[in-house]
Image 1: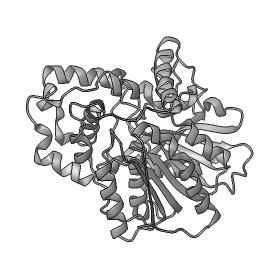
Image 2: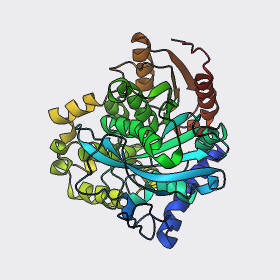
Image 3: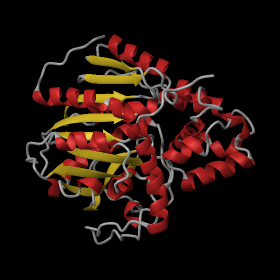
Image 4: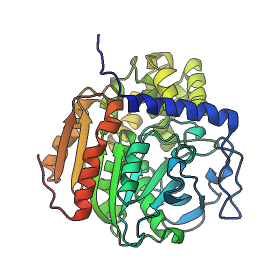
Length: 409
């Protein structure tokens, strides 16, 4: 029987934070900050908040242009940062304009004109609207708060994307790199273009993320030279990366992480209309996935849906059809080198994001000449959310300081 190391106290506390956030938000609601744009009507809480609903049609503009903004409560950092929730233009997986939300935080003791900007790509939050990372930050339930605190304490401005699709009728594009990469990149552009932040358009920029966020950060690193060449990108840190979605999802069927597998199918289907997930769902699968999108955050994905099987959700293996294979391959990392120094890390006993495909990504980047630092941790997926933070921070600080990057390829 396969066993995993017991999660650390921080890991357990993080899961508890998600549970409490979901439960308390449902019972009490969280009053959003007043809208800074007259057309953005605030609701009564994270489950009824029209700030997140994109205007239709979208306004004209460039990726990274700010559509609307309002003050953020910033959770436990409310006294030490200036913070804003933003909606900005970005690009979806089909190359079309979309609207994405996020949060920008600037330490009050930093000079914004000189502050580096870190795009913080969050890990899995779940498909339901109440799981939106910006809402979690606002209510003090962001499970990656220690990593966020590291960056703010270092004097860095931070742009946290919510990714595409978090609104009252959520259609999130989970683990779709061609959507997530632009969302990460454009969060930095939005932070620079929101005049209230006073951040420099020439600021040093870094991308950082773990798990879903690790994949998003790596995709942002691959796409940046062509998508946003004006950014002064100096480094990327990516951990627990789902580089090969086929290899990641196949080993989750019937296991602890089945909810993540099911959510990945939903994310791909939301990104690519031709996949037609509903056409091969059983009545049970259709009901379960509808329930998931209405109410599941991270905790529910890992508990309510644990150990289930895809055969009980489907009438056929429609996810192996050519159109699915083509989109899965299109979202496989490693085909383009990251042009800046990269810190890539993975847990050897990762039960959610297979270690072997992470190791294959490491080798692919090395073969492509990426200046990569590769590190493994004798740990599980959840614990490494936290144990990797110190090395990530050291790597980012070295890039900001201009320390020459080394490679252990």
